[in-house]
Amino acid sequence: MKPKAVVLTGAGISAESGLQTFRGAGGLWNGHSVYEVASPEGFRKNPALVLNFYNQRRREVLKASPNAGHRALVELERKFDTVVVTQNVDDLHERAGSSRVIHLHGEILKARSVDDPELVYDWTSDIRETDRDASGSPLRPHIVWFGEEVPLMEEAARLVLGAELFLVAGTSLQVYPAAGLLSLVQPGVPVYVVDVEAPNHERMGSVHFIAGEAGSVLPSLIKNLVNS
Ligand code: OAD
Image (cartoon, rainbow, N blue to C red):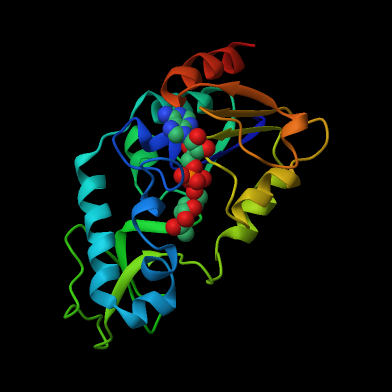
């Protein structure tokens, strides 16, 4: 049986594919109010604005391609039973070839019923205010907004508790509960954090931090982990 690895990724791993991160200079949250575009209240107040914001994100994801960072994580599967737990709503891990991907914050290429969270549809075009589910309810992006439950959190936490290797790439570790996964890693388990800037997190003192872009750092780091 292969040892178990869990990889937590964030917007930084898709930055080299041309997708904007959220925080920092040029980040999405610099140009938009988080609560206007990423909360249930914002959607109720101005559905057109919210749909437009995510329609734009969907178009960008469809134009983007996986980069060397996404592809390196596929190589990890040669030695480790690997699960990628991503905060990203793009499908670049899947397109790179990762076999198990958990999307904590939802998926931009899906739409769901406003009234029934179980009614989820594959969706590659814009979502319009006039679009309806099978029962006639409006549709919304299949995204976990601020103030909403993170349905896959329990599964992710269980995986992290059993991890024998934990990698983090391209996340500022500012958003909970996702950032709390790092604190669940068991003592003695090696943890590597790859980011252009050291994230601010209580566990950073006990991790191997490697500064650099995911697409440059991950291929060599993963080659070493697979061959060691
Ligand atoms: P952030 O924008 O908060 O953080 C991106 C991180 O990636 C930062 O630490 C950057 O330094 C780093 N970074 C940028 N380019 C990089 C590169 N080429 N290689 C490696 N690292 C790089 O994004 P997240 O941490 O993913 O949630 O944000 C978490 C959540 O906050 C998102 O899922 C989203 C947002 O609000 C929702 O919308 C629910």
